[in-house]
Amino acid sequence: MKHLFLILLTFLLACGGSQTTEEKTQTQTSMQTQGDVHSFAQPENAQMTDLGLDIKVDFDKKIIVGKASITFENKKSAKQLFLDTKELTIKRVTLGKPEKETKFQLSKEQAYKGSALAIDIEADTKLVNIYYETSPTAGALQWLSPAQTAGKQKPFLFTQSQAILARTWVPCQDSPGIRFTYSAKVEVPKDLLAVMSAENPIKLDKSGIYEFKMPQPIPAYLLALAVGEIDFVPLSENTGVYAEPALLRKSADEFVDLPKMLAAAEKLYGKYAWGRYDVIVLPPSFPFGGMENPRLTFATPTIIAGDRSLVSLIAHELAHSWSGNLVTNATWNDFWLNEGFTVYFERRIMEAVQGKSYADMLALLGYQDLQETLADLKEKPEDTQLKLNLAGRDPDEGVSDIAYEKGFFLLRMIEEAIGREKMDNFLKKYFTENAFKVMDTERFLTYLQKELPETDKLNLKEWIYQTGLPQNCPVPKSERFDHVGSASGCYIKTMQKDCLDAQWNSHEWLYFLRLLARSVNSAYLEDLDKNFHFTDSGNSEILAQWFQLAIQSDYDKAYPAMEKFLTSVGRRKFLVPIYAALLKNPKTKALAKEIYTQARPNYHFVAVNTLDEMMKK
Image 1: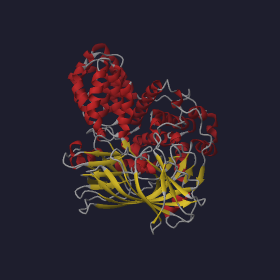
Image 2: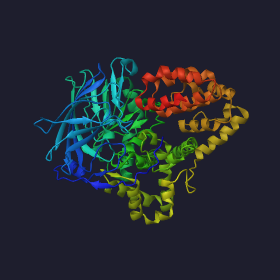
Image 3: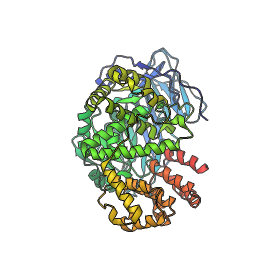
Image 4: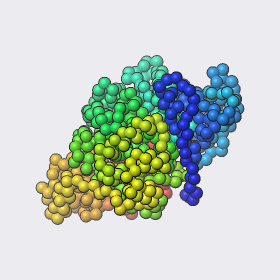
């Protein structure tokens, strides 16, 4: 049930306090927000500035146990510090380095948000220590058995803190508008390596104890931890890849262009601000394509296609190092400021590395995704606005192609109106002047009007505050896809494989399959499978589209491969449309629920949260 009220006021305050290091100065200039409806924090009274973790990872009990030491600024001599928690067991809380015992209280748990942890503090308190343990069902944590990993020998743990799941494994002020530095001491089984969104080790420490530091201030959703049988290979002086040994070389070969991407990004919009940029390839149950954790992008193995055809996802996560990690959405209602900018930046990186025709294909596929999302949301038109109202809702509901693709096309529309050179100068200044700060939609519009007053005539408020897609949305074109369109028409008429080009890349094949969606029956699919072996493809994007076609056309020869895919891959982007197609077809509805029952234990909470609702219908 959607709330009918609006958030009337969101504004930004500069963090105060005199600090000594450059990173602390960045924290000082960081902006915070009041009015985050998804957090219990009261940063206007007391705001955290640093987190110190001393934790142990217990695979047997599937819990993390230890201490979180939170440094904060008590701005108004508040008597209580408020933190976000969810399903955490709080054992005791102390004040300062003397560890003076203090009282605390957990509020009644609320849907999505969890419980407020209210800690009694004194006027001069600057540090609290919370002794706690997580729940075995903590939403951010996925505990994998050896059988669920590539190596099949050792267990694995990874976290997913976005959007508001950091509070399920660390008591903190879990709002994107609150930034803090952090350090951590993490104890894990002695035969496993631990890595975080921080300065990382590259070799196993036989003690099983690892220490981390993140000197740049980050919001809580960028807290990240992975523990498992992990190796590392460098790609350049400041880039590299972590993965399970069985996937390491294949992953490194797939991401060989990562240094070029980083160089292209820096040339566009300024120096990379985070030191190293590494990628870790996680087990397949990871629910997203990637997660932009600073210094260490978490990535799905579904982008390992063997031909480097899906690495635009890495360009996307790299772009987040500027849009999102450096300049962050103030609340989840402003999510488009993270993702729309990042998609724009991603496609500029890919254009620099792979050429304009490649970027044109990405834009046109994105436009198709946007049109499909607009159709899917016709019963919820308010969710097609860029500025969202997620009060009373899980902010994960704001994750759709509206934020990504409508946000992208807004920026592309501005670029086409003012010219690319002026657009690039604006974005470079935007990232530089607002580094380590947060941004809301209203402040962005004010900034844009000041820097580019000519954009006043571009109906920006219609783009942001109204539903659907404005008439001045650019419609991308692709010469390569025009050729695919002609070939598909030939094939539909004649069913001759000579109409098609076996040398097409994955994007061209994906576009071809999308064109077939309303035009073919199982005979076409059987012919295509015979000649091009789609059911056995190693490309997850193509497989996901192919399986939807197979379900729609009752091509049941693809079903065994589809079931294997659904039980081995946890990426929500693929799971949702395939299960939706199965549930829509009366012949496969029972099969959908049968497969889901089998596969559900392998999925992350983020995916299960979405799919459980689908299965109820």
